[in-house]
Amino acid sequence: IFPQITVYSTNKDAPGTRRGSVAMDNFNGVLVVTNPWEVALTPDSTGLFAIYSATDDMNACRVLDDDYKEIEGRGNLIQVGRNPRAVRVSPDGKTVWVYAAMDFAVQGFDTQSLRSVAKVVVCEKLPDEQWVLGKYLFGSSRQPMSGPRWVSCFSCHPDGLTDGRVWHNPEGLRKTPPLFGMGHTHPLHWSADRDEVQDFEYTIRGRLMQGRGLINGPIPAKRGFSPTERKADLGGRSKDLDALAIYSNSFEVETLSPYSEGPGKLSEKAQRGKIHFESPTVGCVTCHSGPYYTDSNLKVAKVYDVGTGLSDPSEKMGPKYDTPSLIGVYRTAPYLHHGKAQTLVDVLTTGNTADKHGKTSHLKKEEVLELAEFLKSLPYELPPKQTANSVKYRLIKTGDK
Image 1: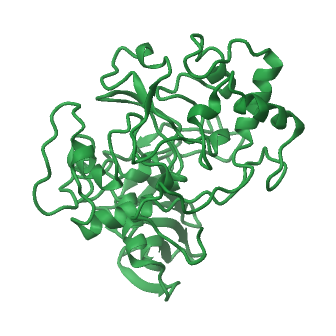
Image 2: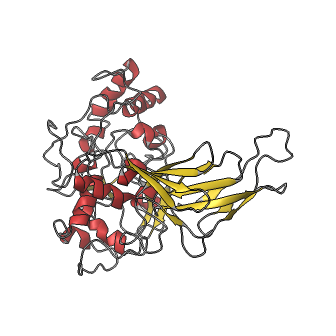
Image 3: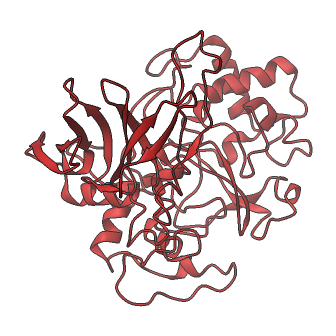
């Protein structure tokens, strides 16, 4: 979120190969830049261009070589296209090219005057318009999404993944979840306090993002940690907000776990772990059921006390939590709502000493490892793209089932 640029010397004999970092969030005074994506040097290494995908702008800088390499800005930020994701300087050093992903175009700027001199459209036929709009809003830290320009949805959920961090939110510690399969696993949040992506209008307008919001007009006031969002029906009130929901709900599970043996196949160790997982004695499948390995659904709210709520004195909404999907857990450490389990083995052992999160204390060490191996193998077969809990606002492709 807070961008920095550090200049390194590639000369291995130089007295110091790394110089002090330059904080770019205040490099432009009060105008914050967000989600730094890439930098490009001029052929003679005297110029540097840095792009920021969430604020749609670019810094042009001089590289100062006075035995302590630093950079200095060349005037104001340069406005580029939407969601810049690549920058290159031409071999002759005269043009800097910026790929604006959400404009589906490459834009050229004169490296001296910094004026736009060319634009090349790279895609004539755009994907679904609402999906495109939603993706742009998801990655934007400009108004109406954010007032201070310092954070976007993408900042914590890059391309639908997780930043792997635990954030100290007002409601307590919360580990960032991935979004893959989310269109089939509502409600949302660890506390299941939101039943539609449109409820994140509260986050957009709130203290975190401080944006104008995507709905014209008021929304029901939220007081404290009351379940206001579950009662507010915001879907359909704003085309932009619905577009954000469509994009956010469209991260489908398309790849198998690298720990699986192929479609529908498990290693022998994972097969033994599957037996433990489905054992009534252990009880994992009691909550982690169905094709997405969660009983989370919109018809009947299900939250459970699995013994983790009391370990965080700042918790305001626990100690009961929604059942997270286990799809792709091999790449989403740390685990549990507070992120205090660094590995899947920790979830099953030190994170479950009271046997409230399934019964695992009787398992031998090797059996715990087998169970963890099965969890790492998920998904070993792709889940359906349509379930009884699939939501309305998502991108549905022909043939999805």
